[in-house]
Length: 225
Length: 251
Image (cartoon, rainbow over all chains, first blue to last red; front, side, top):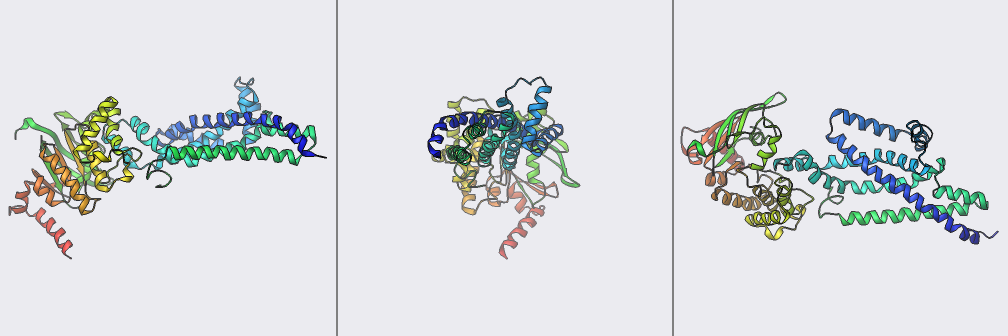
């Protein structure tokens, strides 16, 4: 049996899963930042109830296997709160994002706490409010400190996104499995899918490293810290 | 000097950390254009005193008045007072992610609400004051300690403060860099800036200070012109202290 022509025939279909997978990843990463950064700020600067709430959130989303989270939200939580009509794609992206937020909040928290105390003292001594000091002095430094660690979230979420297969999101793994069923060719098809994951992984990290280099400041950040 | 030109009034400041009373009732007045120097052994509350003035460390008891308005217990208005009370730190505390120029600009933009062009001009002017105009685009990590401290002085100056607090501004610097920072401070004093300086630099104290306050165990033990404290036989404690430092250096 000649595998290669069959593989080439199915390749466009396989590649059509890329946009869906990347959609999941970017939506989840974006949601992760949107929730993770305020959560980190809440954990560092917030009142005790806020710190507790964030702690419980992080404990919950980091403590459960991703597949259980996915099923919980898909079969239980979303239908129960009247969001049963959401597509599998949206649910998958939201669950990956909620879980990513838990991890990202801890990356940002560590970065915020590693900005030296003198930065806040100097800012306040000039008459800045706490809010202005955080926004204009602490966060720009914390984001630079966080970026290398944050970049790891991209390959994490990219590989995690494949579990959305379990709730029927039509992403790369789902399409791969369909092709396998149709052609009865297993290993070469999975290898092709693996190759696509590796390329996406490499390309994304390359872009993130370029971003790191772009916002680098002499003597500050990964080199000096 | 009369009471009308009092810029800053400090009254009976007390501060404890844990069970230790660091400040035990410190009072003094600062007149416009005056330079007061605080000298004394480590741990006698000199730095804490400066931080109590701008409420970075709120005192347990006592009041601070700036131009007749109470700074202590001022709630959110403290940000208004801090604009008028500049501060320079031992370890500079420059904003590490900003160039020298942006360090000076930041509070002009975010606190004073100045326009970009105006803030830029003002920041350049202040950097020129401390002789660092051509270093405007360098980041803190690219500056020597002396340059960094001069930028931090420019940053304080840019707010047009009524008084500047210097918290051991040269203690982290070697003698050569210390000299360049002291030169800038002497120039400020000559130009009529009101300054409170915690330092161990006796030379600076003698040449610039209108008054020296010798602090020991959380109180002002001796107070007067440098000449008086060093030469009048009725004052002994600061002389003893300086003698101890000198003999240690001779060893």
